[in-house]
Image 1 (spheres, rainbow, N blue to C red):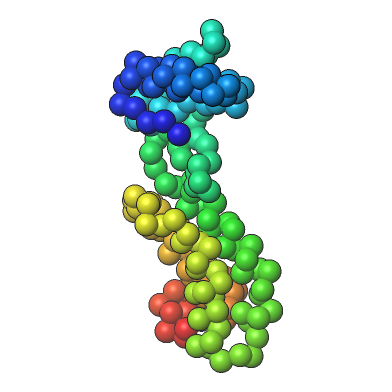
Image 2 (tube, helix red, strand yellow; image 1 turned 45 degrees about the vertical axis):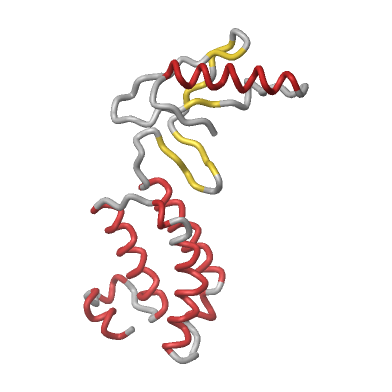
Length: 162
């Protein structure tokens, strides 16, 4: 991954990388190389390698995290929540069993929340992102306590139960 504040600086960095790589008989695969501008304005970046322009993308996965061109974390948070819900559902019988409530809570925090919050220290949380996480928390507790949304139990009551 190369980062630059200006397009020209990025092009210079890539040219230098290509030059050094060729000394060691290494080449950049232009088909696999992508470019993304992180900004509020949707300007495209024009970076050339061997007379071929690199593809501009709106998002890509880097070190297991989804980076988007708007610099927001909503997509990553939604993806993490989906993975955590899948993990919860995989072990649903354990989380809804007759085990002690405190033990089940610890299991959910260890097994499910660790998946949901992996990489959270790099997130810039906005109010909407926080709401997604709060909804997911209530989803977990309601499933754990076998409370259907049709039961009309308020969130405060669910939190008191757990």
